[in-house]
Structures are given as structure tokens and as C-alpha cells.
Length: 304
Figure 1 (cartoon, rainbow, N blue to C red):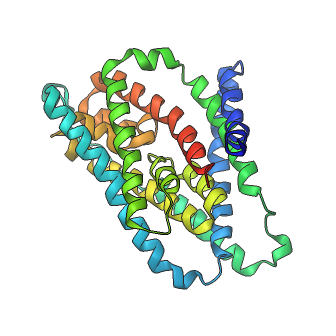
Figure 2: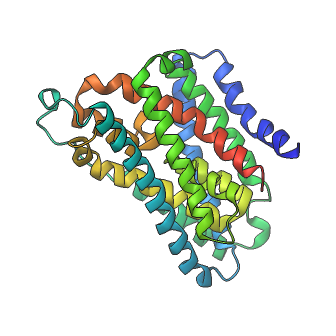
């Protein structure tokens, strides 16, 4: 019962934001604040990571967890969607509509996020403890983040009904989320110290590094928060590099590779690789995964 109450308390800001009447100005302000808040959250996570005792002794464990989780979550999504395309004949994007120009790849955003994490880490090392953020700071920032996410989703102009109308987008979303999330169960079976619900929670970020890092830090501590953050941040970087290549062989797998970022950060790369005709599928997939991801992460982590 306590887990359900926690779930409702944390997720309620997102639904409040989605229900609020919005204007173009309000959405623009919320999206700008969202960018700044993401940087602040990354710094706070870096601070908490810097406060972990004997962190140097845990680096090997972090690397082991991260590499395994990356392989499982990326592999599950790619393989399941590639099989889906092969079964239903959607092997690749229409080459006649594929732009000749290769998409430009920019990793500046990802590097900025890693810098914020490093800044937080060094802040924790040089500032006295009474000047550091108090306990539950990540929970407060998470609720603020979800409020702004709700406003941004409302301002996108895409309703849940519109997203669900696109049959291909709905099917791709369902397959991607099912197999990617279940890969978390495999992850839990590989490590005795990881519970089933923790594994499912870690696998449900779908590339939403700022949110997964915050939720996992709040639920399981800074080490696991860093694993979740780096896993989902790696998905974004890998997607930017490999979407054009994957698109040649499997349209659905290329869309799913970016996870939740297909609605924003990796959207230009997807469009440049496949053409504008793929937009309805991408919008449907991106919207559904953006709505479901925080619900699943908070739900599974509430059983901590």
C-alpha cells in the first residue's frame, strides 16, 4: 500500500501538468526550464555519487553492471523489433523517400550532460557537508521535472487518442517496451544483489537518462542512479550514430533504438534517414514511451 501511495505522490505532478490549460508561451517557458532542471539534476546526482563511500572500489562493479544492462536493453529492443519487421514485411524504410544527405551527428548535448555529472562529483569533494543539498533533494527535483514533462507533453499537441490511432506506432511501442523491460528480469537473474523489481525498474528508462538517474538514485542510491543514467545516456549516443545504418535494414528497430528520445533528440536523425513519411509512427512511438516510462520506473522502484 505504501508503494502505491508513493507512486501516486511522485507521478501526480506529471498528470497535473498534462491537465493544466497551456499556451504557446507557457510551453516554451516550461521547456526552457526543463533544460535547466535537467542540468541541475545531473549535478545533484554527481554530488550524491561523490559522497558514496569507497567509490573507487565500486567502479569495477559500476562498469560491470552498466555494460551488461546496456547489452541487454539495447539488444532486446533491436532484436524484437527486427523480428517484428521481418514477420510483417517492414524490413526497411522506402529508399525512394530516403534523403540523399547523411544526417549530421552532434554529441555536444551528451558531452554537456557528462560534464554536469562531473561538476557535481567535484563539488561533493570540495564543499563542506553543510553546504551540500539536503536529503530528498532528488525527490523534489523529480516531482518538478515530471510537472514540466506533463506540460511539455500537453503542449506537443499529440493526444493519447491520436497516438493510439496509429496501429504501427502502437505495435512497435508495445513490443519495444515489453522486451526491453523484460531484459531487466534477465539482468536481475544475473546478479544476486539485484531484485526482480529493481531490474525491471532499471530497464524501463528507455533512454530517459535524466529521469531514470533521478528515480534510481532516490530508490537505490547514487551508484545505481549512475548506472541507470549512463545506460540511458549511452542509448542516446548510440542511437545518433547507428540509426542511419539500422534504418537500412529495419525501420522499426531504427525508431526503437532511440527510445523516448525519438520524440525529440534523435527525431531529426530518424527523419533524415527515412523521410517525413515515418513521422506518424515516430510520434506515436515517442509519445507512448514518454508517458509509460516514468510510470513503470516509479511503479517498479516503489517495491524497493
